[in-house]
Image 1 (cartoon, rainbow, N blue to C red):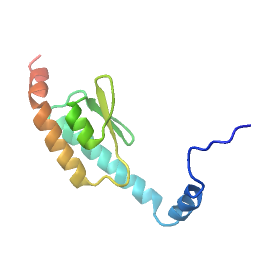
Image 2: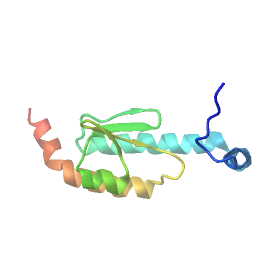
Image 3: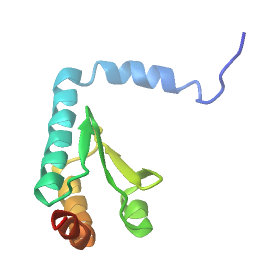
Image 4: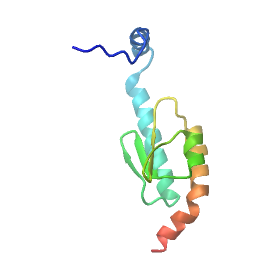
Length: 113
């Protein structure tokens, strides 16, 4: 038997309290709507390699500076956003504007093939 000590003991009671604070179905639907919105906006901007898997939206990796600024998870040449409850449309719009400005020339060159 093992004991996992990766979290402080106070986390469990806090999560139990949060379970009754929210309408989790409504919260999940809001996150899903935001993920769909992000995917749609990136595709409209010309990001042909963008796809979504539930709350995860995958797309080509931008610069390290943009990854750091928006805390993107990146593996090889792929980045992703996991749209959780703290992510609002305003956050997504700022990211979309910065991402498409940076990647616009790359998207345009992909369309010319």
